Amino acid sequence: MDWSSIFIYDTTWSFAAEIVIRVVVMFTMIILFLRFTGKRGVRQLSIFELTIILSLGSIAGDPMFTKDLPLIQAVLIMSIVIALYRSCTWLMMKYQPFEDLLEGTSLYIVEEGVLILEKIELGQMSHDEFFSEMRMQGIEHLGQVRVGLLETNGDFSILLYPRDEVRYGLPLFPKQYQSVTQIDSGDYYACMYCGHVDKPSALKELCSRCHNKCIGWAKAMNNVIIR
Ligand SMILES: [Zn+2]
Image (cartoon, rainbow, N blue to C red; front, side, top):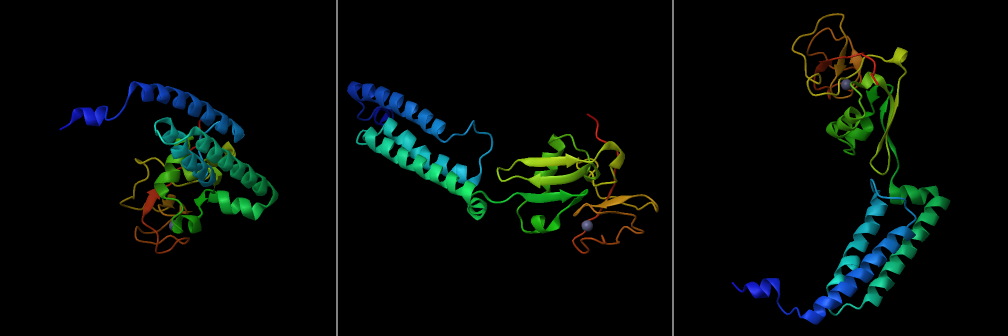
């Protein structure tokens, strides 16, 4: 194996010096570019913003070490991308349908303590995903949640019920999110698929909201949120 070809190949001292200049220039360009997007910082990206970052990725990095890639081309491309980004954000502000197309729309996942089924059935969300989102916000069961909205950037907005309006709901933590093995009459149980709370008379009774999708009953909880 030719180690020098792996690590050095045809690198000369003069090209190493050129790399230093290239990196400094491109580094500055990237910072300027990101400042021009007008964003305050990056936490979670929408699909549209991710597209910008992806198209920026190789054009920002390649000129740092590619000999026959003049920096002016990189600067030109970055300027075009930033112009596109600014025009798109302007159009999105003007025309709502355009924004929906590029950014997607926010989705209701929970309303009045139960899961909104259509969204889950479309495969846009999995139980695990939003259960963990809600758990991280200190929510123990769905009966505490009035509204759960999935934002276009992947964030979760949650409105809670006030203490005295907390109802019975589906537990979200793994130890309580368990199918019961017997039904005690008079107790509240939550459908493990849709979160509907009922007093089923038998274990094999199906949920009256999602019917045959019902995957079992978990013991419903109604404790209030502690903060
Ligand atoms: Zn159900």
